[in-house]
Length: 501
Image (tube, rainbow, N blue to C red; front, side):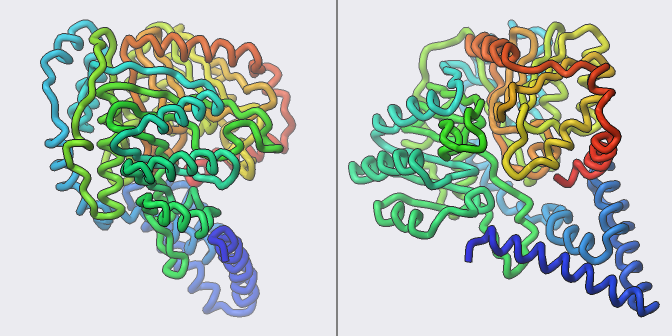
C-alpha cells in the first residue's frame, strides 16, 4: 500500500473517531469532562510552549474546537520535537565539516568594503549561520524547467568524479527517466553517483525505481524516513532542497524539482513558471557542503575525501555569493531573518516572487513599512493554485488587503501557476533558492538559498520579473474590497490557521 493511501486512511480514521467521540460525549458527562479536559490541558501546553504566537493561537483554537482529533493532529504534526534534542547529535559533525571547508578570506574582506550597508547583512549571515562570503564564482539564471534540464543534462554528461543529487520531489515520468539514464551511464563509467530524496515529497516513488538505481551502482538515501506505524511526528520536517553538484565544479539549486510538470507536460498546470540557478566555481563546493551534511545525517557516511572538499574557482572578483542553509535543526530561523534584514536595507525596490505568501507579523510589518516609505514593493504570486492546495492559495489571498492598504503592489501570474522563489533588493542584492515566503519554509523545512551581491545575474532576475509582470494581473485595492462576503470569511479563517498549513 502506498504511503499516500495510508495518509488518507489515517485521516478518515480520525474523522470517524471524532464522530464516535461526539456520540459518546452527548450521552456521558464523564466522557464530556475527560475529552474537554484533555483539550484544555493541551491548549495550556501550547500557550506556554516555545512556538511563535501566531502558531500558538492557531493550534489552541484547533484543539479546543475539535476535541481529540485536534489533539491527535497536534501530537503528530504540532509538537516541535527538536526541543527534545532530535537533531543535537549532528552539531559537532557539522562543525568538523565546516572546519575542513574553510578558505582564505582576505580577498572577500576587500570586497566587503565596497558593499556599504550590505556589509551588515554579510556579517549577520557569517556570525549567526557561519556561512562565509565567496568570490571566484560565476552564475547563470535558468528560466523555467526546459532551460534548467537542458543545461543539467549537458553538465551531468561531463561528470568525471562524482554527481550529488538532493531533491524534495522525484516524480516518475519522461523527465526522470531521461535523467536516470544519464546517471546510470555515468555510474557505469565509474563516476560516484549519490541520490538523496525526501520521503514525504517522494511519497509515490516506486520500489522498482529505487531498485533500478541500486542495481546500477547508484547510492540512494531517504531523508527523514516516515514510519506511519509509529506515527512519527518528524513527518512535519521535510527536506525541501533541490541541489545538484558535479565534481565540485558546477552546481544547481532553485525552485525546480524533477517531474514532468516542470517541463509543461502536466494537463492541470500547462505552462509552469519557475526559476533556477547554475553556479560555477567556489559556490559549487558550498552547495556540496550542504549535501555532505545532509548525506551524513541520513547515512552516517562522511564525505570528506579531497574530491569532495576541493575548490575549483573561476576567476571573478567583481561579485560575491553567500550560500545559506536552514531547517528545524537550528534555533534561529536564519533565512527568514536574512530576508527581514534585506527588506529593511532596501532603498529603491523590493520585488518578491513566491508561490505561497504566508508571512509572519514581522515580515508583514517590514513590507508595509518599506512600501509606506516610498520603496517600490511588488509581490508576484500564482494566478492559479497549486494542485490540491486551494486552501493554501486562499491563505495567500488573506494577506492581500493589509499589504495593498500599505501601498504594496500585488500581481497574480496570468491564469497559470508560478513557482519561483526570488527576492530582489534594489539593483545590488538578490536571493534565489528553494525558500517559499511562508511559515513552513521558514520554520519546518530544510531549505537553501543563494544571496547574490553585485552579480550580473541580478539584472537577469530583474528582467525576468519585468517580463512576468507583463503577463500578470495587478490587484487593485478598490476592486479587491468588492469581493463577496463568503470569500472574506474564508480568508479570515485561513489567516487564523495559516501557521498550520
